[in-house]
Amino acid sequence: MKSLFRRSRFIAKIKPSFGAIFLLLLLVLTYSFAMFQGGFVSWFLFFSFLPFAIYSIALLIYPLTDFQIERVFFPTQLSAGDQVTVKVSLNRKIPFPLLFLVVADWVPNEIYNQDSKKILFPGFKRNLEFYYKIDKIPRGEHVFEAIRFKTGDALGLVEKEKWFDCREVLLVYPQYEEIEYRSLESDYEQGGTASVMQFQKDTSLVAGIRQYQPGDRFSWIDWKALARTNNMMSKEFEIRQTNDLLIILDRTETKNFEEAVKFAASITKSVLKYGGQIGLFSAGKDKAFFPIRGGDQQQQQIFLHLAKVKANSSVPLANIIETETILFKQPAVMIVITSVLSKELLDQAGAYMRRRGTFIVYYIKKKNDPMSQDELICKASAFQKGIIMISLYDDEFRTAFSEVKRA
Image 1: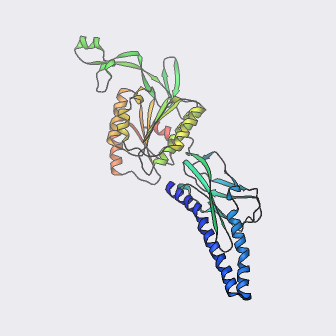
Image 2: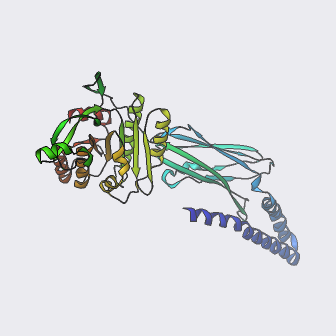
Image 3: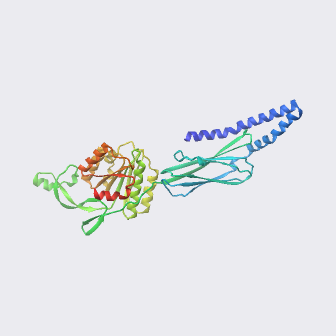
């Protein structure tokens, strides 16, 4: 697209020169014909062509840089699927009579709209404007590079074109749905409290010992019990609750990626709305990690990332989780949002549950997209391992937390 943009601007610069040469050639030919041929007809042809030639010469001299342009979007805060109205205003100082003016906004390919190109008839007008609408604008960072003007004379001998740099970035945030924020009642330490679905071990409070299990930390081994019984024993800790969530967004390119982003935005919005704390990790060509926090600023930062994020990960999510040690240092419930199920991902979920606590896998699908045989096998395997894995369709986001309670 950028190469086409540069080529179009180069052609626009040299095109008037060819028009000027052709116009002068015609003017010389008609004058020569009138001088050598003589008579009423030949001179009539010359003088009939002369006004058009004079206008064309004046048009060549008239600078299109006289125009001042402005592009404005209504509204400025947009979510995916919204309609946006674009207003293009043109103002100039010199009221040169223009027969027509073709104005084309250089719209990004993903939101191309035929209405972004208009034919105006300025005449002597100094102020012009036109509007066009973009329906169902997709999520993303859309860059509007420039606006192109094109005008000419009545005979089509001279055409002038000008590209005006008018770079604007339109940021479209992901859609979100209100999720029913239902809590699970629990009792610990000072009394009753409510938590959404999460339990974490508090390593400062030892409740007892148990048989060592693969995946237990080295620091959990009870050396006194080992010396006494000659069996590997691990410390059993008190369980405490936390409302903190850490979202891991799978950025593998799939047909359901937009739905996964929408669900991540929905969870973020709902948790922060009810005073919870949340973090986000996503990895593709670039990595982004937002530590667990609460408040409006956290929502703005996460939504800004979700507006720009692209499905460009070339590494399976299971490998990313395995190598990113920062994820295992977060005292929070891990929520994976993915549209790709794999045995490796479920193995990582099982390993995390043994070491840290709750690990929830949301498998996002579009409505009317049935589960395949392989997906059903993965889901059954997750159930056998005690992993909370929930297949969620794009019209079921509202009950996402309730599904965890039933799982």
